[in-house]
Amino acid sequence: MASRDGPMVAGTDGSDFIHRETVATHYQIRQWNGVDHSPSSFLCIPLCVAKCSFTHRKHTPKYEHSLITISKFALNKGRLRKCVFSHLLLALLMVVKMVPDFLDRLDIFILEIEELEVPQPLKWEYVWLMGSLASFLGLTAIRKNRVILLQIYFGLINLLSTVPILLAAMIYFKEFFEYCTEDEPQGLQLWQGYPVSVLWYSFIVIAMQVHIFTLIFAWKLILAWKNRGMAKKVQ
Image (cartoon, rainbow, N blue to C red):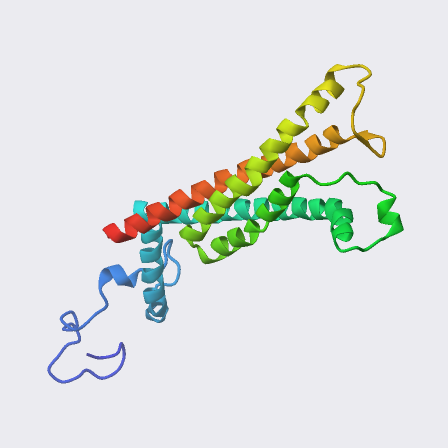
């Protein structure tokens, strides 16, 4: 084969190059709309092909389903984590309320705290506070994706958190109902001029919401992790 103006190779007129090795046509088009189709631009072909392949895979139903599942896992884990931290904040508030009792049991006298005259804690308060320790088990289950730990956490929250709060609602219901229905209720337990039943019901309403949402998100994660495990076994 010869150049445009150079000498011709003996035995050929320069038109026999068609049979030689060439780049396949579908790989020759790197860009569209008439932009740079030179041979040097073909260096980007493998990257373009890989990108197209990834884009095609990304839009397959199976891949999209995996993305949706992962996003749901992350969403429920984030929500559950927020509920756990809310539970711990409530537990901290309960600890502050029970500090005078702890000091009495340790025979430590602090005049400023004794003057507050905080009501003595009931048994349900101790049980609920113990149940808040299960929050650390829940955080571990979330971090390690352990369905067994999450199931244990689910049961502990039901037994040691939700049940005591329901019991507290029943204990203070009578006084709370009297305060809400009577113009001048008599015989109500007061602390710093505020009805104890109203203060406790404020705590109960918030705690009950935290526990309900905790159980909902924990149950969703348990079902999702179980279904994922079954799907892996089938595959």
